[in-house]
Length: 102
Image (cartoon, rainbow, N blue to C red; front, side, top):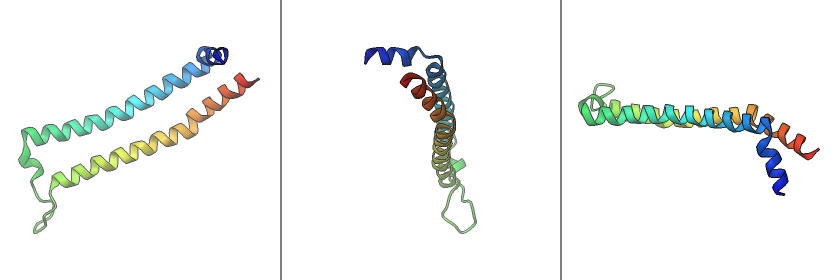
């Protein structure tokens, strides 16, 4: 069994798969973290920015809208990862499995 693991680990397509998966994950994670920290920094240094109401005579503030946007952005980026995993990463993974099983 160890021999199979070594063959997979040393296969160039596996290395490509790992690098691509890591790159996609870090990019998408960085986007979410960037937006989240900008949100927190605005709350910390300019809290009145998010306390403005979006519509007159309405209790919905800009902070609620931006917070909801960050949540929806996270869900959207998760969907992008799932799409990329299904379209690109799984193809590379299947190719590696076929080669190793020969």
